Amino acid sequence: GDSVTQMEGPVTLSEEAFLTINCTYTATGYPSLFWYVQYPGEGLQLLLKATKADDKGSNKGFEATYRKETTSFHLEKGSVQVSDSAVYFCALRFSGNTPLVFGKGTRLSVIA
Amino acid sequence: ETGVTQTPRHLVMGMTNKKSLKCEQHLGHNAMYWYKQSAKKPLELMFVYNFKEQTENNSVPSRFSPECPNSSHLFLHLHTLQPEDSALYLCASSQDTGEGYTFGSGTRLTVV
Image (cartoon, rainbow over all chains, first blue to last red; front, side, top):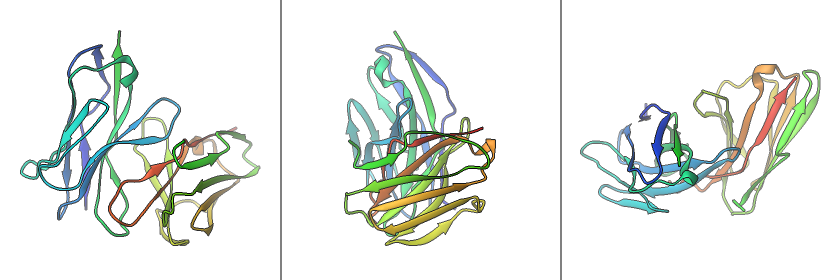
């Protein structure tokens, strides 16, 4: 079946460091891809998305590019802040009445 | 304001109690979902409703009973829960267009 694999956390970085969280997927076809973020005590919020190959999603300094050839959607940010500390979830979804398929989440801690 | 409202935010209940969680969305979405998020476990999809009809029940114990009276409201009725049911319960909604979900902030449930 369709699945999403994320790098294991936790990831601990110093402020202003470069962030990469790896995400790869297995799917038959070409799904839409998403990154969600969950801040402490909150639900999940959509961070960015891409709907087709080579699309780049971006928001709040985060970016991810839909790579069909490597079935990847890695999340990057050039300079993280303490306020970016959260759990990040990679997900895929096909159109129609199909559910989102989530990865297990990666916890990021940014220290000052 | 996420567009999906969950109440209550926190709930403590005994194992013999009956309580209900409520979720409301006014985004015009036609699908609603219940997820369970436990510490150190992946997100678990519990129930899916499309146009008020339940389309998925992922082997959830009968002590959890969903209700969807209309496309804007979703309930999760709880009865004789166990301590291991303590978790964050998340509601989400979506359109069937392959877009992502909009999540509520969740209900933090503690069973004592």
